[in-house]
Length: 368
Image (tube, rainbow, N blue to C red):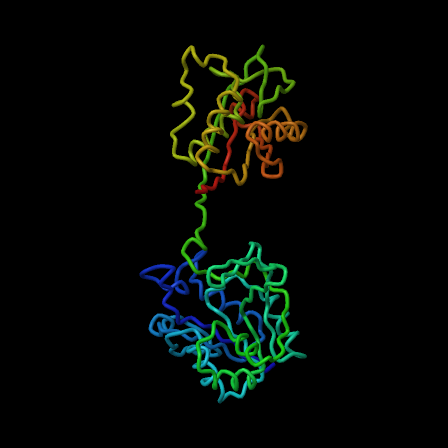
């Protein structure tokens, strides 16, 4: 297929960052521009991919395949677009896709959808509806705009090369996108449904990723006769309970320590020392202030992974009840909690049914 893909990446991004143009900013372990490059290659729709940039030195350090060319751009977006069209004219393309490097979240599925629609249309432009109320101002008056009729245009935008070239070469004014050229001349455009995730990055806040932290918790207690066994906040029928200053609930203790570890708050003994105040305290009472503080500090829990290490009781028999209990105690959905039972092949205190241990890994995310 005689398609060519243009990535416009010549902007200075003054609203984004004073030192780094947004297209070269690292986002999820790669530069923003790399998403457009990789997706256009992986789509296998294009004979050539052209990057238009004012940072030739940086991009030429990358090991791009031969199908990718890099040229110098202009001062404005429309300047860079015209430079790309003039450069590609010698290849006699049938179709051209023009994309803003500041949109890394488009899908290959969208590229294929645009390509399919271009077979019977001269111009294809993806759009989405506004989620916000829209108003416009004329002099001192402000009017409401029907957002159901307002189209937010996206890129990539695709065109028959010849038609786009002829319109662009005679345009004297700066335009925000190639669709504008067609609309000014009353040319028909096929508007298709775009993708809500295909947003344009303008400010640094647009790609601010919440920080995720991990914590590890571990606890072990001996089993003793004539004491109730508590695991995960519920009473388990068993011949022995866990020895400890509290009720010895190794699951809740390990969860508490995992939270404290993820938030860099020392350990459970710091907050609940072996004093008369906390003698025989139930573990849910120990967990509650720790979890409340976590949520007050704008953290959310992504998931809990729990290993209960014992020969008996069998975890499978009580798994659902324990997960239900933990879910209620920490206000977390049950599908975010995983509980696994592990034995130690009869080795050591645990193998001789004289102790139970638990280890927990927690993932939490910080929100502003």
